[in-house]
Length: 236
Ligand SMILES: CCCCCCCC(=O)SCCNC(=O)CCNC(=O)[C@H](O)C(C)(C)COP(=O)(O)OP(=O)(O)OC[C@H]1O[C@@H](n2cnc3c(N)ncnc32)[C@H](O)[C@@H]1OP(=O)(O)O
Image (cartoon, rainbow, N blue to C red; front, side, top):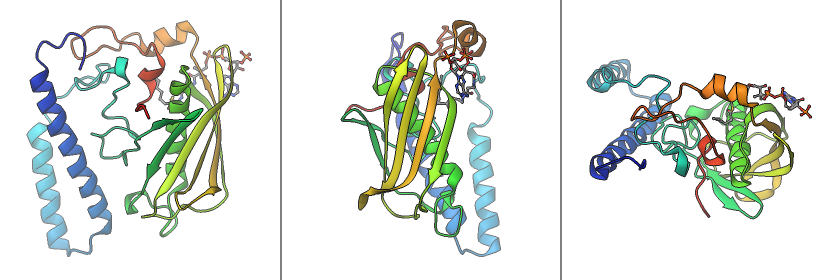
């Protein structure tokens, strides 16, 4: 938890409840695209979801305020859309250090579908962007994506274990060239998606313009200031 938390117990409780909500919503998203229930059942489910939204929707943080559950100094970003355990949009990827890079496994459901039975190409780009950022963090670097390119050599099947990898190829000054791959976990040598990216640490005046107003939940200024701030990375 953050340094100035007097009482960790309520935050631990909030973490459990928020993680539970994220998991429940993740199941709901998948079921909402795969269900064959009839119209009446689907409409009733929509009413239930709206009631749940009304229950927690009034208490909201401003966009400039980090969530109470985040601890950027430890790299904990619970609502990251790729790695955040509490974000239902995230599979979530659990990214680990591995050799000179990072690795993660994922099995994607129908909510990620592009061509029938295969993963949407934009999702692959999203996951590669995060993996490349995580590789930067693992190498002690941080930056924002300046350039990202992908080659799609084969489609990624849904409901099939995938392995995602990334590593820093070179870095100089504020720039880092980073590469990544996605393959089937059962055939890791056959690369299906290949990514190359340039991550650039913004010049100081841009950092100030982008992140100068960001605070933590207590109102303290909390701009990104180290590799872990940008990405969530678990030790191997
Ligand atoms: C807190 C961070 C969260 C991170 C989450 C995970 C990753 C993300 O999703 S980040 C979000 C998406 N990315 C963005 O929004 C970034 C938008 N772009 C920008 O703000 C700027 O272009 C930025 C910050 C990348 C670079 O700006 P600036 O700091 O002024 O860099 P600048 O001085 O122009 O360029 C530095 C070097 O990079 C090179 N460079 C910059 N952009 C590019 C590019 N697109 N292609 C090739 N080279 C580039 C420049 O040529 C220069 O090279 P050299 O030093 O050799 O001359």
